[in-house]
Image 1: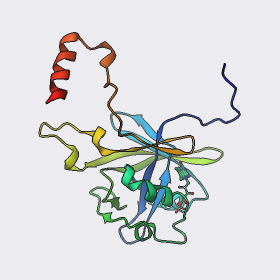
Image 2: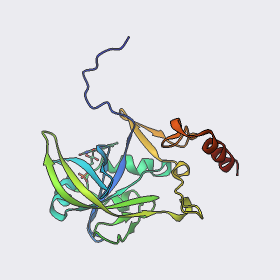
Image 3: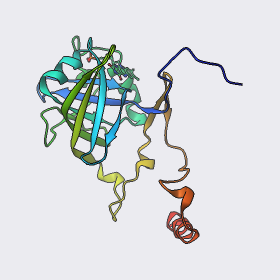
Image 4: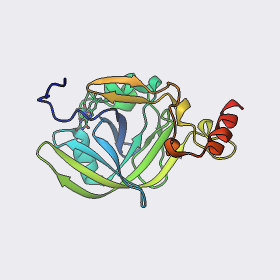
Length: 198
Ligand SMILES: Cc1cc2nc3c(=O)[nH]c(=O)nc-3n(C[C@H](O)[C@H](O)[C@H](O)COP(=O)(O)O)c2cc1C
């Protein structure tokens, strides 16, 4: 039997990312769980931000931000950036995070994060509680520690954090499968097993 929940946004797991905004000199970080990918080519994303947030006005004014993925090591800093406002403190300083210059936007990237997505806002959609900043991902940076010689990205080793109904979970467990594995040919399965053993 299932109960009918009165709560709406129970989609899970979601990423919980640190979104940096502003400039190298005057920057802020906001933690965001309401985010996702909405188009592949060009790559597009969104962040939904309440109008009361300090970061809301910065992103609205500058039209840019950086999405920084959260690892287990960064979990406390991520939580902190979601419960304190940049109106009162410099979150980079307070959370001991390092600003790193981005290529295409003036917002800084968080150096300690393994993946940074530089984003330029293309559209803002207003909803009752949040403004949704729709943006094009104009540059992506991945720590080369997670890039193999053949150019494959090892997201499994990043120890990323997922958000499910108010709690944080590690994503470091064993891989279950991969895109399309439910229909792969036995020959491909054999090849893959061999590759995984190496
Ligand atoms: C895990 C987590 C997820 C959050 N997700 C969102 C979100 O998607 N949108 C939002 O507006 N606020 C979200 N918040 C709240 C903001 O991060 C928080 O209000 C923050 O202090 C705003 O900072 P600012 O005033 O410096 O912009 C989240 C907080 C946490 C801890």
